[in-house]
Length: 297
Ligand code: ATP
Ligand code: MG
Image (cartoon, rainbow, N blue to C red; front, side, top):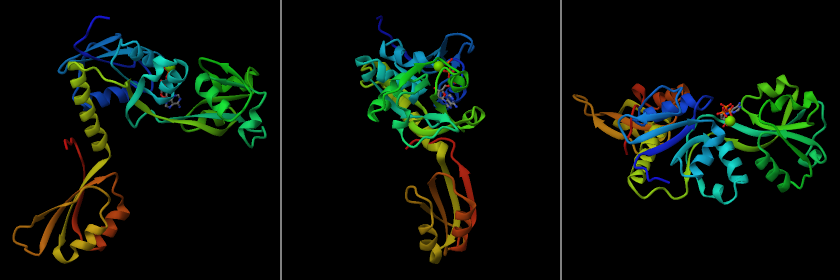
């Protein structure tokens, strides 16, 4: 294959992962030319381009070296790893991205008696994930027939083409609408940044490192809040003890009030009203909770 000097990332052309993946890349400072109905998007600032494809094709494109990285659901990545043998084993998750959360679960008709996986013995199970389901059935010593369907798995029991299903579940609404009951979770999934175990050693490798650093910043920032408050020196200890987790707070003097301090703390996660009220009771005032825009540690 011709050597490339630009990094190429595969992502879903049109589907649940498309908007959040693009937004995440934009937040990492990457922008792309060319409309999204095309297969290829050329990166404007950094040497990073996008290939827009069906999500099922993403692990294969990375394994073949057509793309360096991909944004894809863990469900699709692990299914590929399970059935692609050596080619799949070379792929890994470089980061979990916190969107596209769902789970791969077994669901049975709501009136079917079910206590344990062995109750599935002899049944027909419809799924789009034969690799992951097959592995789970073997782990649980269940001998069942796996029926592979590309889509509309949830209606298979109604159509009589299968007895139970193994499919992706998010809220569970689709299962309820089809009179199905979730029994076992095989995999907790979310979108991940997938790539080869060993990254390119040329300029593309440097670009991957830069991207990973920016991603870490963006992911951390998404969850972070900056808490600002004033406290007197006497209540400082009590207030500090109540602060949500994060690095050591910064203390600043308040002009003209020698016994007062301004405290600044980075909190990993939401700060609730209840937490604020408790911190206030301990002696804090003038409290602000601010979102964090960018962070470079
Ligand atoms: P494509 O045309 O790219 O093959 P698709 O129909 O396979 O699209 P989507 O339905 O857009 O894919 O789902 C993409 C990914 O979103 C899934 O592989 C999964 O990781 C994640 N996801 C999150 N919630 C759900 C859900 N309720 N159902 C299906 N996928 C979900
Ligand atoms: Mg797909």
